[in-house]
Image 1: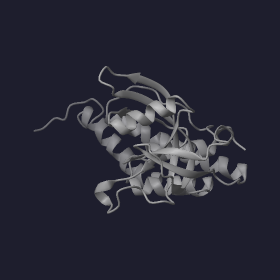
Image 2: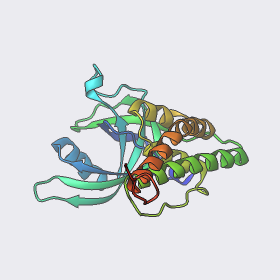
Image 3: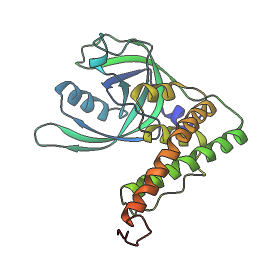
Length: 233
């Protein structure tokens, strides 16, 4: 059992915050709390365990008013709060563990509350996971390096090659610029190896494009000849 699982022992119900954001375990997420019902939710959880469930929900793409029972979300733990004079708050959260909403609970609270069950990825062969993880880390780093060149950024990149495979898969999935439905598919997977496989395929498809753009950008900065001007007759 992981530390995340240990921390939610005894937690059977969660306040649910529907939002058009996909949160992954281990990934930080700043939020601005301004609606009265979520101000109340924040006050309640700050007096308790600091946990709420962040469930992806895009009301413009759904004919439902709330995320349906059975959906997957991620527990958000509030780690920092910045109260504002008018009652709003800026908060920092971090994803803890995924959950499945079993059913909604009828309460007098102005926000949603659900009975949930928690889950993590299945156990798999560590050697295979490490190999896949390093491949994903290498491709992701190459793309990140290309993006820095395109944006003329000088900051160095952290070495993520030895990051624990499941954690790496969540971090890369969160950082990828893909549609929310793709992120949800990655969140719902219970196989680290399958998540890494899908990420590797997406990164491989994107890699050549980013590196070519970076190469062209560098050439353009050098006027096409590594710093030498182009002479026209």
